[in-house]
Image (tube, rainbow, N blue to C red; front, side, top):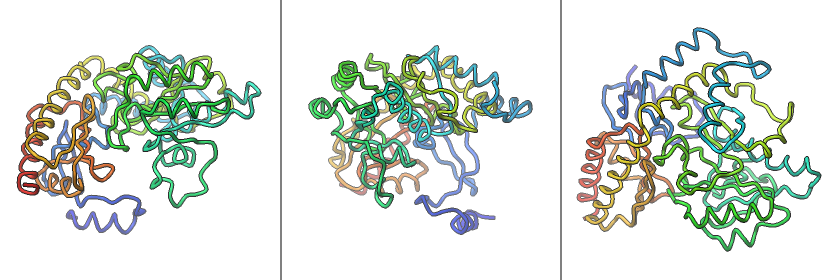
Length: 398
């Protein structure tokens, strides 16, 4: 079958929930993907900030295969060694005391929302169940997480959404302070709003959020689904701020493409989860946690974080220089290898033009070009994309 045959087949049998690009990928290596026709593309999307260690990572593949030959699944009615090892690694390298494993970022955020509410229910404070979330945020597609998402387009058509979520402008300390009350059980936020346009929280805002939660007894939740596991040049983005949350959610890059989510929490918060209060049949299976354990070990062993910081700084410099050359570029933002370029025009045509030239990029909020490549991207590959964008802007927006 050729590319058109595969596309026609998929369009007939898969639910139409994605606007897909007309390309069928067959293999990948590092930061390069190859389609069924043999065309190569340099990947600056990484499965939406997922494949941080690159495609077809040999160590992860070996760990996955080795565990698959021993044990696939027994459920969480029993203990398994890879799950315990991964949980220990996450606890050792974060603020948290305990970990709950699931299969996705939405599930991790569901767990965080349930845990925050149950904390106050267990204390007999039955009226304290409201959660403050941010405008333009994105936390998932399940009912609780889309209810917590501050984008109307995500919620539209699924009303009525769940009660109990109050939205305030991102980075607005006064608005946050005005809305925290005796009914607030938690404040939920992303340190960088990825789907919201690569908007970074200010240090003052995060410190204020921590202070307000401390003063009122509310729980502070950081959604690090996209920023966690090295994307910003540190293992977790909260390290940039010197502020730890009470609960943090992870997914995406934790499995480098395999389905895993995790909710990390402090002991005095997570004790509200007792046997039977929450569960996930496939959460933290031996195969997936063995692969994720290799992911986190590589993050340490191969100095991926330093490379992310250095390449990210270089990339941002090149994007900023590009802005100086082309008036169509409004600004450049982001940190590490989570970067955005806001245009004064629609970004979709630029994404399509880059793809035709062999570069995969992403557009969010209609005008924000988002660059979230594997952390193993090279400077030469960055230079190639910059030259591609320069040529497109020169010929399209002169």
